[in-house]
Length: 364
Image (cartoon, rainbow, N blue to C red; front, side, top):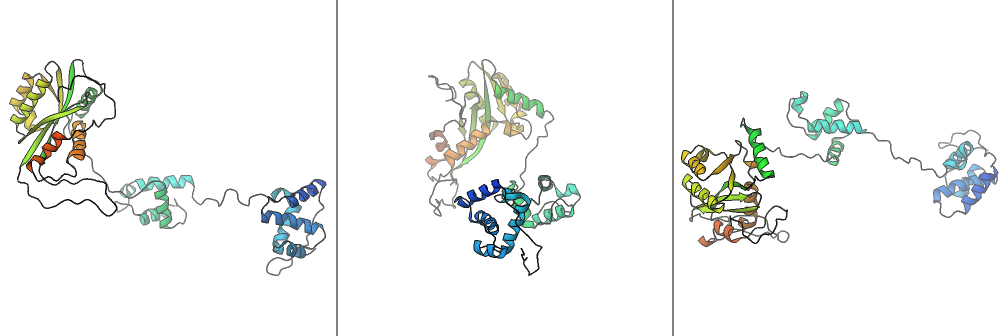
């Protein structure tokens, strides 16, 4: 029996080996199986036609496939029987061209600074990163777009560098531990209160975020004159009671801050007060203000230098601004910022449930 390869070259002589009884039963069963795919069924039909005495060329024509396909499956049957007829050609897909170790090295390089690796630039671009990795044989020969897709798949994107402040206070750790200890646990018969100034509050249009139809945003005037002056909010936040209150003043002199602390002492007549406030030179270095704190039996807890983020009242101010001042534009003096703050009730920002009490909070 002769067969031909593509190109017209003569192939070696190929004959179908005899089938065992088990193979004959399997062949009859597969020929009657209607659940097989067309390609798999063709393979069994090729063996059946050649077994009946037809040549490879005739069997291929009767089955409807190329004679080289029939030649290959007869040869495969002679080698291993029907075991490979229904086997997936490549069950694991195409062999990967990038190993997991190479991907980890790519991520490490992308997250590092080029100057740390002795390069004369300070920012990676996709082309520079791909060129560096290919030159160091960290990646196979791939395109820059392929590298960009790999970075995005791993969650890496080009982002603007953000800044952060570090405290130069030599006693930073000690002050930070004390403040956090007061936040975690309130001393017996005491109150932990945060104080800060929210300034300036003036009468002007204040933008924000609002729901609107697509491409139909709400509009607010951009031209205005501030003729009503400004106000200062001297705020107190009871940490463990989750209550914010304060006073509005035209100015924020030491005299005004002193009156605010006198108001705070009247709210807590029988409790020790630990007041956490920013390390501002106009109050910390003022002898009359410090004498007032001693007379009122108020213990100031100063935040470290350039570390006002330790003061929890900062988050309260952000919430108030979002829900009371954003999207406001009232030209009338009665619609000033302080009026909005006084009349707009805001729920506590924390999600914990406070025990209900019939008595109002002393700051309210």
